[in-house]
Image (cartoon, rainbow, N blue to C red; front, side):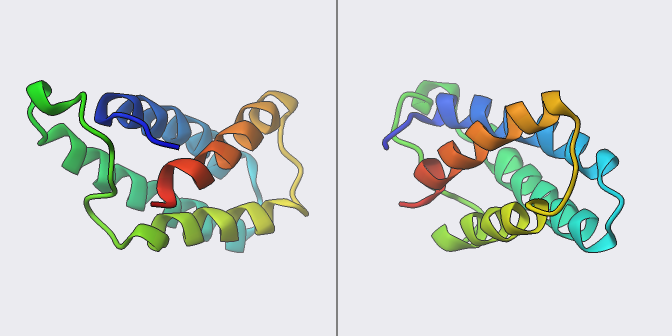
Length: 108
């Protein structure tokens, strides 16, 4: 799936918001650690995207801060760890579609 830089920025912001909820709702340290790792990776990517000129936001998005598979591997690992975690219904409902979409967004 091809998305623009502006669409990627909105997607990453939404994913970060949900991951922050996941971090606070989970009690397992390994889940918190992986969630924190994902948040840091996405925050750094978002910071890099804010450096792109507004005039260029219509261009196709490509990961800037990391190798293509770094973010995707981190999110996949987090998704695996979350299979045994209990999240609030709202968080669960928000997170699953975003993780599915992340596979398409970050797998260039």
